[in-house]
Image (cartoon, rainbow, N blue to C red; front, side, top):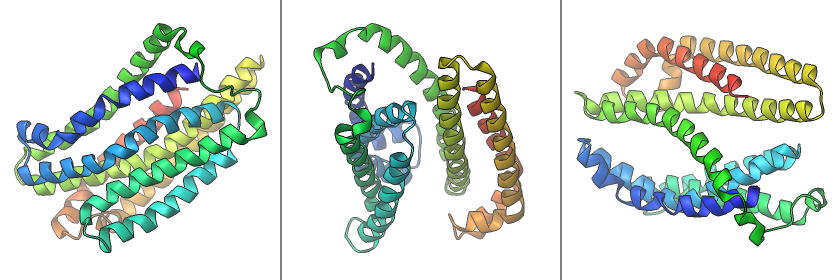
Length: 285
């Protein structure tokens, strides 16, 4: 199953780069500010190399999660993150790339993470009975795999596009620079919180599937209950931090007093959005 998905990832990832390459023209057609569209297009062009690594990496992550292999996943996140921080500073501040150095550093860190996990899967004794490499059998049941993949992809795309649509709408509003900055801060804040939700979802779904496979439904229910309580705890802490320290948080993204001031009025709505995002992630288990 996993090798079939790998093959489809290669095909599907090949369809996205042309869209990203001409994204500046597409954004201008959607009535976005030409300068903002140009910078967004430049960002996406340098992010294209990391697109393939991201697709391959997701397969490895799911494969290892189902095997309950956790420590290599943690290391493959910490090490590339540390490298990315260093690379971002070097490429943005010490080279002529400037702004474009940030997406390039992200692409490089994705490939580093992929190679770290890839070599581990290939040479670790933990997977000698589970990973047999690619074969012609990976083409079998391709249609069945695609039915599952396309419906799942549609769900994720609808969720992500709902947020991205806000950015497009902000770009055509009066004072687009301010509204785009505010939406950008909100989306980045939501994304950071969503990473925690994804972690809870991944651990809970793996635990639940393993317990159900072992014929222990009560243990699966306990796992969901614990995850729900953790979810409430994280939401409460996030809400408290945003309500009390919204000016400090917004100041990390912008030095504009107008943006920082207006973000304060959006913080309660952002907390509500994060709350629903957490709960729907848990209910996806």
